[in-house]
Amino acid sequence: MRFSSVNRRGALAAYGLLSAIWGTNFLFMQAAAPYISAGQTALLRLVFGAVPIIIFAAATGSFSVRHLRFAHRFIPQAILGAGLYYFAYATGTFMLDSGIAGALSGSIPLFAAIGAVLVFRTEKLTAPKTAGLLLGAAGVVVIAQPWNAASIDAAGVLWMLLGSASLGLSYGYARRFITPLGIPAAAAASYQTVLAAIGLALFTDLEGITNIARDPGALASVVLGLGVMGTGVVFVLYYIIVASLGAVTASTASYIPPVFAMGIGIVFLGEDFDAAALAGVALILGAAAIMQIAQRRSELSGREGLLQKQ
Image (cartoon, rainbow, N blue to C red; front, side, top):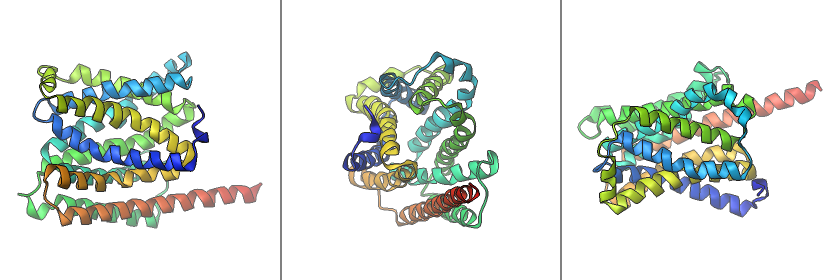
């Protein structure tokens, strides 16, 4: 199947479903908290999430034996983009209300920008990006509410920020070291997910991992919610959106889950409405939008410059 042939209505439906699934991940993580550890939650998510991705990659003919010589490139990506990211998010979500955890996930684009500008040097620091980073940092502070330490677990906030930083840095790493290899996205995601699962299996204490089976709802939350849907299916949906609507539109899907997560926490978990967290989300998403617009304009001006030289 050629996903570029999906019509606009179907692509928009995939966009909405992707955002909704991402927003529910924090609810599913909290469902696992009474039974298994954060490491075990992340491991099960990777194992069951790898299945749809591998099937999709095989169906699209993405795998090749020649990819094995690039295995060393995928180890850092597996750590940043999957293993550490999922572990940190599970740990942070166990400590926080799901809405607050979801709100902090909005910081991913900020760390992606920091990684691209300061770590991997794939982009230049401009005035709009600087303004966006400062605005986003203000949003994180508003959500964390350091002036009211009794209301929010600071350790949970730090774990969430570590997870966001890990995933954000993985974008810059992939752009510099993975993308130039020309490996299909489905194959790259499969290698990354499998390596991350192996790594977590080696370092995670597996004692008590079967406790999750005591609660069918919690088991379904981890296996289907976090794994199959929240990790595997979202990749396929993202692939469809990129092919049909473009990478820029696809990247904006990360703006919606924080709002979904806060709404789900209030409606289904009885969490308190937090005006400060909502304001913080607005600041972070505004910052991400500023930086994305600046990046888009930079790319367009670069293309125009190349055309003028031709």
